[in-house]
Image 1 (cartoon, one colour):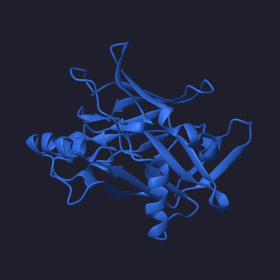
Image 2 (cartoon, helix red, strand yellow):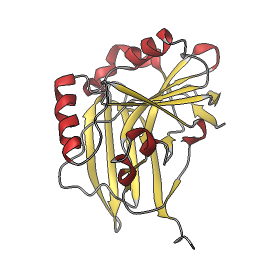
Image 3 (cartoon, helix red, strand yellow):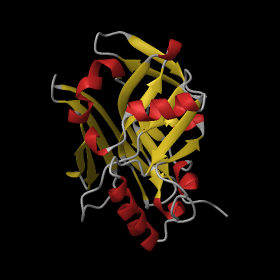
Length: 228
C-alpha cells in the first residue's frame, strides 16, 4: 500500500496508510453539462458510463506524492482535481490532486485508463471542516509545460464539481468512509487548443479567503523503448 504524509496549516502532519482509492468521473455539479460532455467523448470513441456520476476503484499504490511520473507513450495527461482523504479516526482532509490518465487506453475503458497511471497528491492538506463554508470559492488551476513554456490549461472553482460532502455521504452509505480512503474528485474543463500531452504538470488548489495555496507539480518522463 501507499503511505502518504500531509502537512496541515498549523504545522502538524498526518500520516495516511492508503487502503482504497476511488476516482470520481463525470462529476460536474451540472449533470446537463455532464451529459453533453459524455456525448463529446463518445464521438471520440470513449465509452459512455452506465450512470453518472461514476466512481472507479483504482489500485491503492497509485496514490503517490511524487515529482516524477513515468509513462509508456506520449498520449497521457493529468487532470486537476481535489482529493478527499480520510485520516485516522475519520478525520476528513482536503488536498490537491492530479489524476494522470492514459488517453490511448481510455477509448477501451475509463476504469482501465485510470489504473494505468498514478493519482499524484500534494504534500499539504486542509481539514475539510476549515473550508466547508467557503468551499465553492476555492479555485482549482492547472498549467502544462512544453519546451520550457508554461500555459494555463484548467481554471475553475470547486462550485463546478460535486462536493466532498456529497462523496462522503456516498461512501458512508456504502460503508466505505474508512481511514485510508482517498477519493479523487473528477475534473474541470480543459482550455481548447492547449496541448495536454505535456512534459510537466502543475496544479494549485487555492483559498482566496485566506490566500493559502496547496501546490503540486511533477515531470512526465517517457520510459525506454521496450525490447521484444
